[in-house]
Image (cartoon, rainbow, N blue to C red; front, side, top):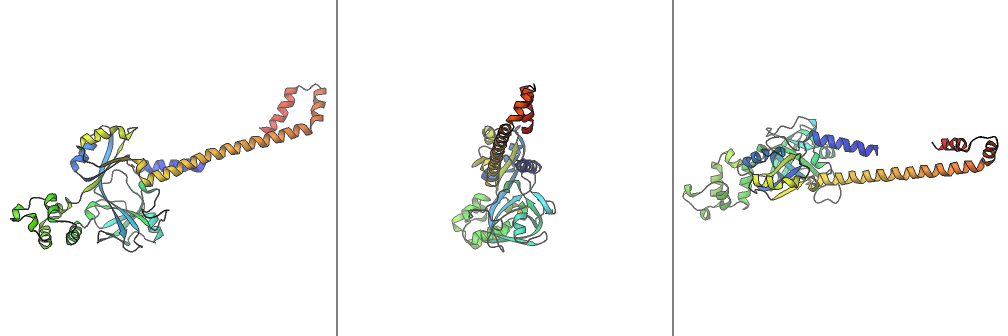
Length: 325
């Protein structure tokens, strides 16, 4: 029971210190206007945009790597256990989960690389972290927890190699001229139609865009926020109206695997602690009743003598009950 209470208190403190989100909204492309609209709501304490991807480690057996790109650090903040504080403006570094780093003997200052859609991203480990969203960790392909096969990374939104990534996507045919036209601006100014553009021409066009323009193609896929509302789903319509329904999924903590699994484990431990406590009390009562009954039976002569001497029955009963206490 004491360990369950201690764990619950530590978990509650961590979630408070890290400002763990109450709501996760997923979509194709959240804007700064969407963020401002959500922050302006009375029921919302604070909100933040971020982008997430699932990659594979380059040198650690293709382990799953969940990467979060942020420009600010206000909601669901990682707790730095070793190394530098998390800095969303640091484009050359990343912050890696300590459990994975310990499994592969990685330290702050080492290089860490992951591969996403054929593009390798290599950065310097600035710090080792723990996240309140990953108290329970299990890779998507694993049946049980293997801390050497699941990592999570926090890094700067501007640290993603967007130009290299788009070039790779174009060469592999995953981004077409129509995609560029929809994402950027009309191609009429070049005197050509989308159907006439080859991959080489697309790469040349891409080279003309500034980094700012390229980052506008890198979508924010999550909008997370904290709230004091007792039922987070009671404010979903209010939030939806604020951003004109520009989202696909709206979920709470119970739908986040790294949170739900651990909470379920805590509930099981709590139930076990109550169950065992009740069992131990019942055993203690059984021992007391059995011992007292045997003592009384063995001392019937003494009890009769005390009665004959005029000792009141309640005093005799109190004498034997005192052993139970």
